[in-house]
Image (cartoon, rainbow, N blue to C red; front, side, top):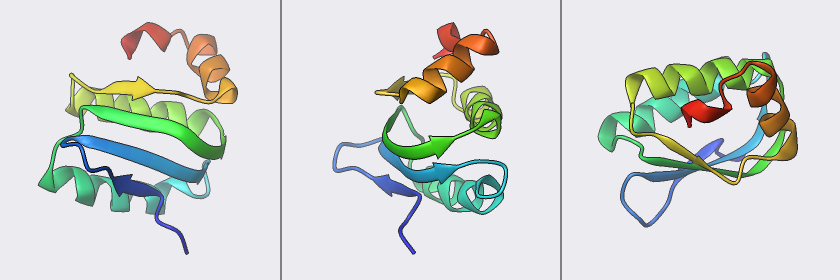
Length: 92
């Protein structure tokens, strides 16, 4: 099974990969938070997310609450629409 999140060579930068929905997020969140404990995130690259639903929006909001400096890079169109729908696109 592929990792849902990988640490990039640049400090504090991570890339999310794969599917992020209500079924995959509980396990993915455990993996991601374990990585974040060793090195707090500043940028999440999202260009390799295959699919997502509103559960990813909730997850990203929780990360933003925990890491206020967090920025998103290259969110897929589906996620952009969801962020806009929930009126949180400007949070990132």
